[in-house]
Amino acid sequence: MKILFACGGTAGHINPGLSIAAALKSRCPDAVIRFAGNPDGMEARLVPGAGFDFVPFRAMGIQRRLTPYNIYRNIKSVCLLVTAEARAKKVIRAFGPDLVVGTGGYVSGPILLTAAKMGIPTATHEQNAFPGVTTKLLAKQVDKVLLAVEKAKDYLPREAAEKCVVTGNPVRPEILTESREEARRKCGVPEGKLCILSFGGSLGAQRVNEAVADVMAWHTKEGKLHHIHATGRYGVELLPRLLRERKVPYPDNPCLDIREYIDDMPACLAAADLVICRAGASTLSELAAAGRASILIPSPNVAENHQYHNAMVLQNAGAAIVLEEKDLTGEALVKLVKELTGDPARLRQLGENARKIAAPRAVEEIADQLLALVKK
Image (cartoon, rainbow, N blue to C red; front, side, top):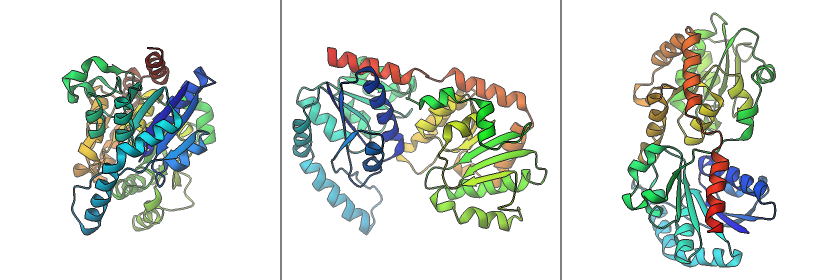
């Protein structure tokens, strides 16, 4: 059996694809799996790093904000779009897949549409509560639409309703198995202290870093909390400057564990009592699987404001508190953190509610759906 995955652009599209591919490989050791993605995207690094074959396929989106650079990009995007079907056929014929799976990103549209026209079984997985443009376009054409949450159905064409299956988002198995006691030891969390985990994405979000610096200035005075924070690439120099301005002792502060990026997310999540973060689909699925209370700050700089829709699923389930960026100030975030860390029972309840909406078997259910398509 040969399976072609098409995904890229962000880790939120790539990692679910890798998780699904690993599950299929575990179920069918003889399966040959290949990924198609942009040669300049992070998929070109992550896919081979996970042990799967990678074939380059260039695709770009249209930029809505018209600047001289974006106009140039849009001309290039149109040229790529004009040749997309022919290039997709070449990739598909060279591999001869029995199944083509998309998990999002510009590359998945032309690959899946072409495969569907060629009569090859196709499926797409949508991670967000508010489906992206690619999923909306593909919904009528593919054989199966796999969704993270029930709410996503409301935004898809009615004709696609029978194809939709709610499976949840796949999460790393370590998220489900990590020991809290061992994780707190590995993360250096002192016994008896509550632990805050905060991050704003791999690049870092300036507004999040600024507000988190105020939180640190508040809680380090008493030293009752342990705080793990990822600055992101653009916050490496920013956060230390913010702490100096707030007269917070750093780097020699036992309450603070500040990093550029969190490489051991399963351990950090297991160690945490409260998480402050953006509302990417994969992150929220991991919060739910780990059963962690959270303050969610959706990024307003994403397509169709989908992070807000993702975050509201958790808030409506009593599993998180949403603080929109337009309302984000250091004072507002400190107030929320102070309330939650002062009420451990509420923290536990938020975490329990999060676990209730988790989909721990998501990757197995997705694999079931995909293998059934091949057999059919």
